[in-house]
Length: 370
Image (cartoon, rainbow, N blue to C red; front, side, top):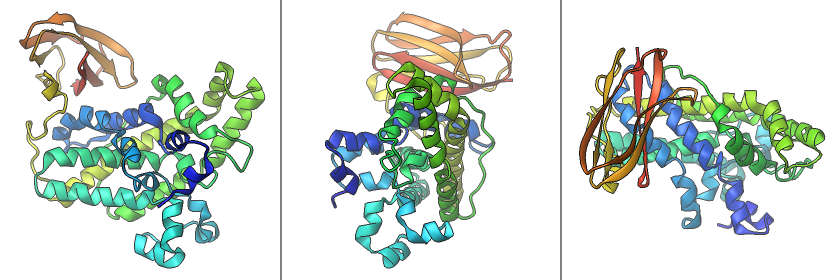
């Protein structure tokens, strides 16, 4: 199927940019911070944190090889007359196709049904204890959930082309987000079981559609302040106008991912993950950052990591707002097992992120200071 958005744009690469959700930076941030909303029953899911973030944009990468992938990332819901009249459309794909025809439905995008299908696949992986596929389906689920919290993925006016806001899509989701991602901070509330997944998914889509006009107004304001769309003054004004609801969208996306992972796990009977159920893809590259012990802790904790070869590494600790608070290790380490101790000293209690960075990649663990 040829997608109408590709037909309307002068180059394929522009179409891919316009269908990339929050961009790689935003998707990474949303998936990584889903762990802020893991509830007391989800402690074993902490080992998913770095993997979900690392694979948060896998779905975007598939667009270049899978012609059916792009429609899964958006729904131009205001092209449905029924939505314009009632604020809703049928929740099953078959019902919508019966109402509007297959060509029309796929041309408008199938984001909510892609989300629900991925959720169902996650349940199936849990049921058969297929942890490696489960975490990758969860990463895809995070991507589609994040797209459902990006308002310009929910409207026919996806690039501001009907309101004189041409180019706002990438200016908002990528240019601005890349510049101000460090200022998008939020806490999480415990994930809850979702009784009706289709109602939940469509519910946040309907809610987030209401922010389309806010983004267009933010663009108008930023242009009036700066006189252009390419300057630092424009980006700053766009952020000043939109940071409140943008942070709200990010927070809700992270929480929704935690809700849906938890719900899928419960649907599957809450199978025991165990501490070694999931292999971090970075381990095969010769580096393994282990979970700190003890965790939670108050006075000190041990941080262990393993290297296949001599490697330059840096271990940093960040708080939940993205501020670096310590560097427990930095330098060249020989092959083998290593351990460093960190004492939080005057560090406040709360959630912290332990991040190991090397030329081979990055690994992350979540820890709690009491």
